[in-house]
Length: 122
Image (cartoon, rainbow, N blue to C red; front, side):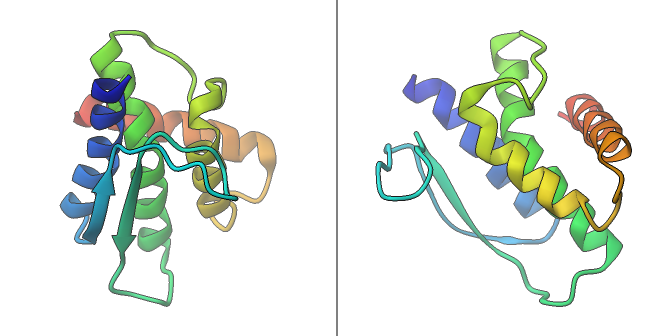
């Protein structure tokens, strides 16, 4: 499980750095605090506070990068919304995509296309 978590968190971190963000910390230690259950965590610092369309797209990419890298590592094509361990990543991607696609069906299609784009990127 640790190796899988390491790939997952590295996916988030690598995409964040590639897109110009700063990775403040990364861990594969489980965190059972009062928030969502997590097997690992990446803290990312973005340089901008006003979000452009590109900034929102970058955050979606970072949110989905962990699940996509894990899919590649496992050689299993899962839907990011259907894996319980990826629920927070999917919620984050859904949140960041909302200003880009207000309609839920279109947002779902947008996120699915973004996941495919990331799969090809990695």
